[in-house]
Length: 426
Image (cartoon, rainbow, N blue to C red; front, side):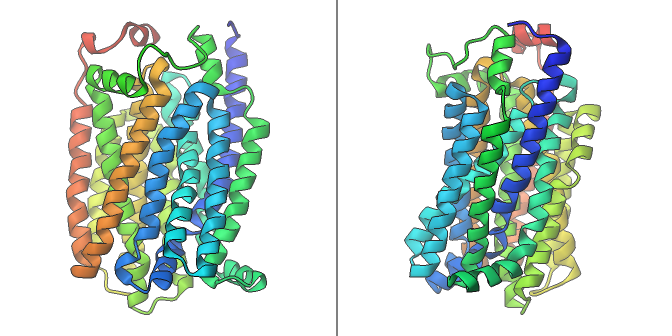
């Protein structure tokens, strides 16, 4: 297929606009429940040690769905995969509300896992932004879509008060109100993508490269992932950096509402702190993407690890309840995550071969989610047994792993490690 450069650029702009709109409303659905997930789990289970389970299952669901959605995208394109992800998340939001009504912890965990599908879709959208982007602009394309999450993500946690009023009106428990609003946001995101993401950027990229419209059937998906990781060590470094940063962020963030509640902080104040955290995660994304394109992905990844360490120092020193340390620490926790995630994700987009692109991206997000789920599950146990400061100290080891991954990623690949198609493209 042959298209003029201007035509491809126009499709890219339309795709970016669509992904921005979907991520904005989708993020409203995702983040509105973050501030209350651990509190709902505590209320239903009656145990603070199980407080992190809802968020952990949500992260675990996002991890598994990341790979499953990637397989759908490999066969049907980005649009179908993203729509399936958001619709599954909406079903999960409904199940979460039902769990609060009947007081069922198993149903809450099932709903949380399905709810995580929308997180997987939201994350996958960042890769869709790079399908038609020029190599020197991939960081900015990816970060623009990540930035869009700011709109819904900052507003979401601050709707906890409104969601309580909605819960009263619907006759459901107060802590399930955020999830009722979340389902509406996810349905809206699915509608935007279904109508507007045409032509599909991944399928068009394959046509322009004279590649098959579906992934090769000569080898398994995992076989393609394994071959790419072996051939390109920088991909392995990027996946490790991505996973480490996400594990740091999730493990500390998920237990912060409980840490603040112990000191008497109101739900409104907890929501405000989470809002600041999410602001750090997404608001500066365009600047981070520009830096990744300007100075390189590994330096930005290393910077993310350093900011995460600073955040953990502040969180470790924060008293229970509301404090300046927890405000600043959670904000920096989000900013460090942003630096590391955008840099590592762009490295993956740079080095994943087209024929295995969705396989590798899905496997990377699967690894990211599983690592974070394990860290989130351990966080509840650590806080229950040793306290929040110990959790921050334990998470510091993962931040150091992020910095080490950046050092490996900075190694210049040999000519033999760069496939011929990438040499021509560059």
